[in-house]
Image 1 (cartoon, rainbow, N blue to C red):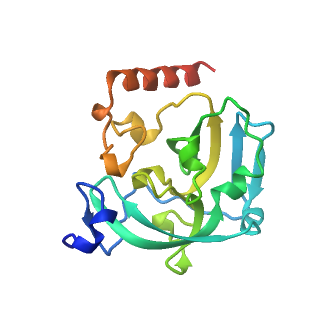
Image 2 (cartoon, helix red, strand yellow):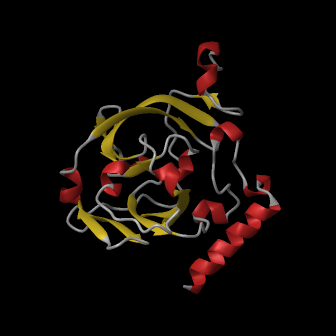
Image 3 (cartoon, rainbow, N blue to C red):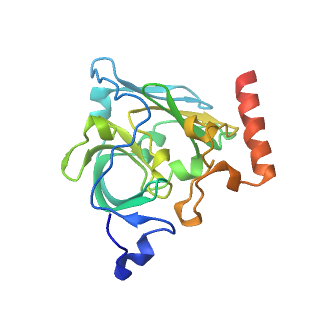
Length: 213
């Protein structure tokens, strides 16, 4: 880790330390990748489900974005160069129903994380295929990971496989295990005990509604 550079202070959120390394943090094993069986789905509150194969995803227009990574474990890595498919490219091909305000992100092997639709729809969000000029390594989420730069990095799910559009905001894997529902690094939204009682009640109610469907 490196000490904060005053010139970069405006890019490093409170409680974070800059690093030039990229630590590998994963709960569980890295899943295998079979391009012949891989698909990406957009489903839930949509007019009709849309599915892309791996080859179809690779044919979508590409974008290049540079953004900073802020991990909830208190390191930040600046100026990451990502290449992939902008989330807006997928959303443009899906008719999302008016009631959808939230998204459950699904990833291999059984990972989930929840997002507000407005955060997922930001112009800087993408499905990353390459990082710093190289194919994304499996331990870092390759062949395809979500990148949502404005939030702590656990929201940028590795091995992403689908977006489920919802009218409620149930917690994903880490959110069920004590992490914050929103995860804004500039507000240090790390853990659920920082949420108000009203927010915690809404979290529990959303999870109950999803289970009862």
